[in-house]
Length: 256
Image (cartoon, rainbow, N blue to C red; front, side, top):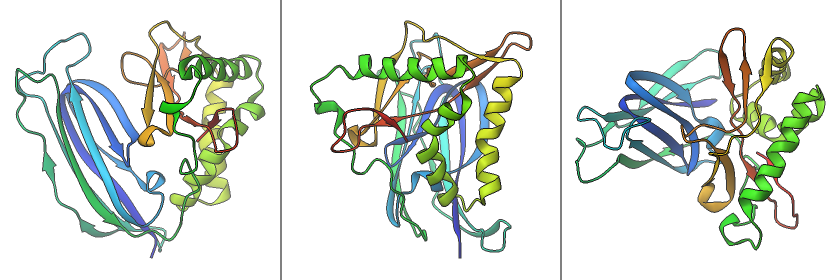
């Protein structure tokens, strides 16, 4: 069996974030309603109990939760052994409570048990970034600007190498072949070569910690990654999610 886990969720009238094992799966602001399914295997480091946290905040530009705001979610399990999605089971479904005007957010936490045939070497041996003796934001800005310069100079191979560990883990967890794994980053590089230009960091960036303090990323006030590309002709924006950690025994950030 090749167990494949997805989270099936809906979000209404809120800025929301979903985390698996304290690592972000998705965040966005919705003025209306959205429903989607996202794979979560890449955030399951090994078999055992997995945690889910969903949180909703007021929509961008608002100070209070909308009366109709809510988040619904459940985990579905499939078997990919045949190369097709074969449904196995559905885990319990959860809904956030009706917004309380005295509390500027909604949320819910739960757990589920997963069995996977792999163990990911990710952030487990990283330093606790909340207890380091340097300015994490300053060091992250330096790292992001390094990646921005690589993209601007067209040094795509060096940029891809920054993502290597992340993509290796994704391929292992998602049961991808080499060609499938390579095509994931190939699409991003194709966009860079065809009209998408990397944006400079904005002044509103802030540090978001995750993985119980071992991961850090720069975000903008819309809750999404600060690393972005823009196509001026089509007015499209491409957001590149990326997180960093510092392995024990080292002093520099590495992407994961």
